[in-house]
Structure formats: structure tokens, C-alpha cells
Image 1 (cartoon, rainbow, N blue to C red):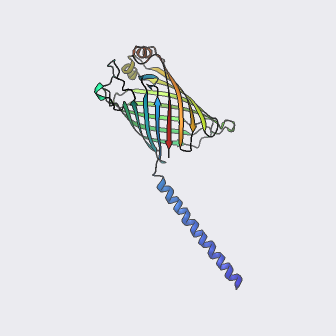
Image 2: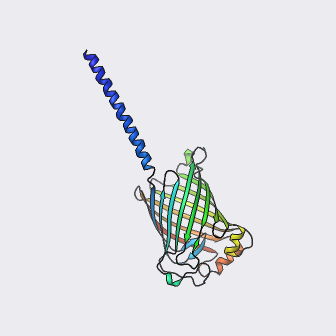
Image 3: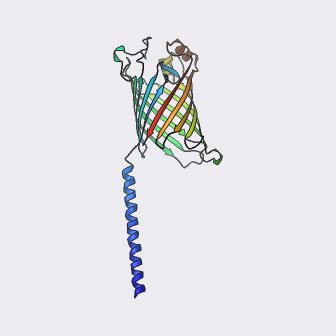
Length: 287
């Protein structure tokens, strides 16, 4: 009788533990579902010696670049980016980038981005990411007010993914095509990025972008009457993880005009040249 009683008590304890385990699994699953709606957020601030775009100098004075990025597990993301002119520079050439002198103190540029990204992870040689983003660029101090591009990107995220001898190395290839919904022009760039991880905290990255202008874009921006590879940008950066969530970065990058017509436009500018360099530092906090 005692053995039977002990057996029944043991059986009851096992059954109770199973119920608790099932309840715990359900609770974890429900929490995961709730957490899926909570985005990962990164806030960053950067100081740059000048403001460059596609290798050309837009503003030769120091600028602050502020960014707030939020991404959900479903692939949706939002981004808000701003460039703040620290010296209130105003271009004297009265060209398409000239600023209204009465609007000092405002952001030089504010970018609003809504995008969706999907990563396919079943390939042996690399994960592949597909990304589409609608962007709205505002220029509060400029005479012309905004741009409205739609970007489509496909990338091979790391070609060293399954190479055991290259676990501290990474190699990314990406291609982006931009269609300007305001000016109806086509524009694109190819990117190659190599990364090396020295240890758990220190890492480096070397990347290059080659920019390509469609016929109308080349004509509107540079007066070139044909499509062309317009410019090249090379960037080297060093990052240090201060904590799990806080990261510091320093960088230097340069831009070269590739097409003769583009080179002439850059050289004719009062703030740019055929070859431009800038450097900067930044901090990013993620949670």
C-alpha cells in the first residue's frame, strides 16, 4: 500500500510539473509574440569635418549628423536622419544647393525613411538581403525643397559566412537602384565592404561605392549628355564597443569624380574639387 501511495504521489508530481512546463512554454511564446511588436532602436550622433554626398562636397564646414533608427522582427523599419550645419554656412554660388540666408539655425537636411527588409538565410555561401525603402529628403534651408527617391537593394551579406578560417573577416556585396519619384531619374551604386574583427570590442571596415547615373540624372546634375559612372567613394572606419549597447566610431573617406563632365562640375564649385576628403567621429546607442 505504501509503495502504491508513493507511486501515485510521484505520478501526481510529474503531471503537475508537466502542466507548469506547458504553462511556462505558453507564457514564453506569448511574451515572444508581444516582443515581436517592440522594435530594436539605435540612436546615433556624428561629427563630420564636412558634409559630402556621393563623393562631392555639399557643405565644407563641420556638420552634426543625427539618426534615429527603429526595426521590427517582421522586416519593417523606420529611419529619421538629420544634418545640422554647425557654422551656418551659406553657399555663394546660388546654384541648386544654395541656401536661404534667413533660415539659419534650421537643419540643413532631414531624411524620412520607411522600408522593408527580408533576409534569406538558407544559402551556403552567404545570407541574401532584399530591401526596399521609400525616402523623403527635406532641405529646410534650401531654395529647392525636397527629393523623393525609392531605393531597391539586394546584398550578399557575408561571403565568408561558412569559412571557418575567416570567422573574423566579412565581405559584403550590394547593389542599389534609386528611382527619383520627383524628377523621374534613375541612379544607382555598387558597394563592396570588407570587415575585420580584431577582438570582441575592436573592429574595422573598408568599403567602396561606385555611383552610376542614368541619362536624365547625368544631364540634370552634371550636364553630361549620356549615362555614366559618375563618382567613386572610399571609406575606412574603426569601431570600438564601449559596452554591449554603446559603440564609438571614427572614420575617413574620400570621393573621386570619374566622368570628365562630373569632374568639371566639381572643380567649378566653390566648395568641392575633383578629389575630396573628410573625417569624423560618432557614437551609437542601441536597445
